[in-house]
Image (cartoon, rainbow, N blue to C red; front, side, top):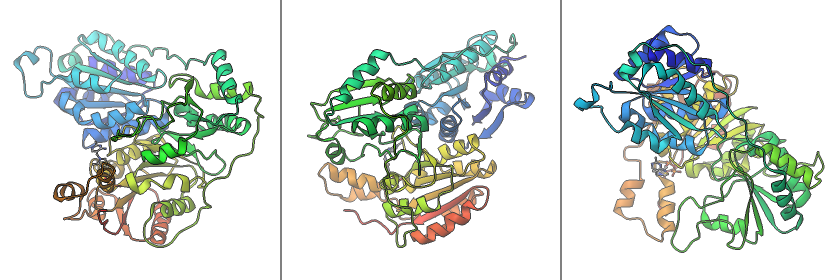
Amino acid sequence: MTGAESLICTLIASGVEICFANPGTTEMQFVVALDKVEGMRCVLGMAEGIVTGCADGYARMAGKPAMTLLHCGPGFANGISNLHNARRANSPMVNIVGDQATYHRPFDPPLAADTEGLARTASHWVRTSSLAKQVSSDAAEAVQVARTPPGRIATLIVPADVAWSEASGPAAPLKVSSRPQVEPEVLRTVAQVLRSGEPSILFLNGEALSEPGLVAANRIAHATGAKLRAPTHVPRMARGRGRVPVDRVPYVVDTALQAFAGLKNAILVGAKPPAGFFAYPGKPSLMTPKDCPIYVLAEPDQDAVAALQGLADEIGAPRAVPMKQEGPEPQIVSGPFDSAGFGMTLAAVLPENAVVCDDAVTSGRQIFPATFNAPPHDWIQSTGGAIGHGFPCATGAALACPDRKVVCLQGDGAGMFTLQALWTQAREKLDVVNVVFANYVYKILYGELRAGGAIPGHASDTFFDIGRPDLDWVRMAEGMGVEAASVETLEGFADTFRSACGRRGPFLIEFRISPFSPP
Ligand SMILES: Cc1ncc(C[n+]2csc(CCOP(=O)(O)OP(=O)(O)O)c2C)c(N)n1
């Protein structure tokens, strides 16, 4: 058995079932091993940003790591942007990176690079296997690290000669620690803060945004009057009718500052303090008031659901409390695109139990509150601010959840970063309805320019206008084997979306939004 074979067998034994890859010569031994061994589904991504984005989407929905197979330092580097999004979402992932043979590297062949250095920038754990007999134990450790709460990125670099040399056989899976519990003392302290009756808020993230987490948080909110908020970009959240309607921290700093003015206590539940996405001259970094103390109920790796349940019991909240109704009733709106109208329309036509992947940028700003009353669904977003996440993340989510409809909401500028994922959707016959908001500009960047007090000029118009020529999403999708149609109105979208949902396999809807005039 080669080192590569021992690694693949170890990953399969450790519960890794899918390999997203874009391999090269240094990974050939792994490809040979995958040809021989049963138990790993192999999926090709036609660029590494697809590979890592798919692995992220898969991990968020499957709750366990995928394997990626990447080619040397440059291949890894191509995948960093979506690895960054995955790291910020606490997605578990095992990256296997092939590299130059140990004895060949001193000759400085073209693909020699600082692979470890690149890997370190986007991984929690990096190791280079130097002996074939150690590859399997390194692989078992990589899975253990990836699965350690709250979820980590483990990267194992395997030189070609280590992969092809004789190994000792697969390693047994290693035990994974469960989430540490929050100390009772912490529950008592936070309960006391909430009993003060002062304006308080719970910032929820990670497991706290799961259905049981939200149910417990709702008990606390009901008993104490505390408000609930999710981060501006959620890694995964249970939403829709019958679930607790929790809005996000607004992206626009002034709106966020206004929303949190007068707060006296902020409590973090698996979340970080709510920092602005960017700094702006004269504006604060934290969205909570200066005099508002921040308490930690649960760190991201701790058992946030048990902490919320324990806190709800500690304050004597009833077990069953009424659910606050928020948000408009779903209805098909007519007319040209606007974000809130789109959200209401989507809420009316979204299939039950869908997974929504949102990389919609400004077109998605108002969709969240407008879909509080949509049928129950999960929502996942790019958590690291690196655009080009939607298409691949939706692709990975569809592989994790073959029985659920996946809906990808994608800005056109962001979509151009990783549109090759559409080809993977076609190749794997995945059940994804992609909606592209074709507004032909980087609209958000005009807003950001204005936020800094500047007026657009020739450089901004060149850099932010992505028309001239206009992208044709229908032809691009069809060129990659995905059926597509164009719509220009909300009612037209509703019709096309319904029929796209009525069939299996990928579909793309280009929502043409009248060309935006810069402010
Ligand atoms: C990897 C990466 N590159 C560049 C950016 C900067 N950026 C943020 S949003 C954006 C444009 C998004 O355009 P689009 O998807 O069309 O959405 P719109 O702004 O029109 O709503 C860019 C270039 C980024 N966030 N991440």
